[in-house]
Image 1 (cartoon, rainbow, N blue to C red):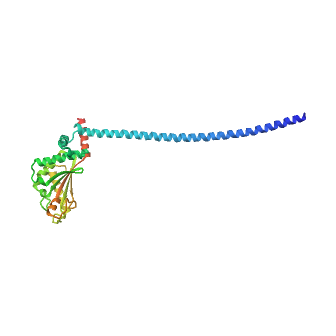
Image 2 (cartoon, rainbow, N blue to C red):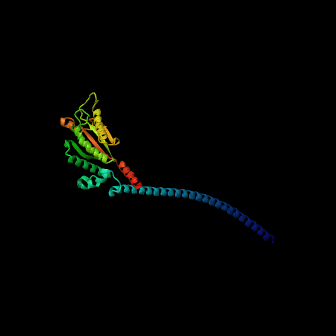
Image 3 (cartoon, rainbow, N blue to C red):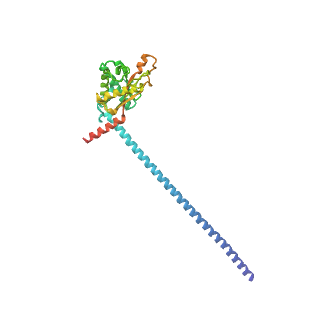
Length: 291
């Protein structure tokens, strides 16, 4: 009996000892699990914060894209409206251009219009055509000394000095008045163009009491023409740009008298200014709406 009781006591003690170890282990497992859960929760919160930041950036990007699309649509609509002004004549193009641009272009042969890719190209073609026709119809003296053409993006009127000046002088000849009158008509009719007057000489040196050198002569000649356009023909001086090129942009070499005569010239460059053109249209549109 005593033996059996001893065995029972030993068994109980052993069982009690194993249960305690398991309890301690389970308790440690629980602590570890809680730690892992807490770590996972922190990582989850960090990921959620990062995701929220990413979503905010995406929202801002989308808003910027929508804003740019709206702005682009507005600019496109504005541009289309400006071009519509030209098409339906509802906007007031100034004088000569308003009445004649489309009509002039419609009369021209297809080969003359091949290079017209922009509005400025079309304006240049119309201006050049009308100038050529005006000079031809007027039976102007020394018409052969005048060449009208398009040079890249401008209308170029090249006038031989024999029509404008005496040799070594910057006093404008009376023979030039019909040409300057025609030119003034074009300038005054279209406020959206500026005009550069460019003097060129040959390479023969000059030095007098009034003229220092060819630089001085070329500038004095272009300025003299600008003054006549301003004072005699009432051209706005803010639209005139006198310039001198001396002998440094020749058409040909200066080896012969004939070549030097070609190089002595004045270029009158008509430059359509589209910023002015559209600004004038906008101003006149506002006036029309106010009326």
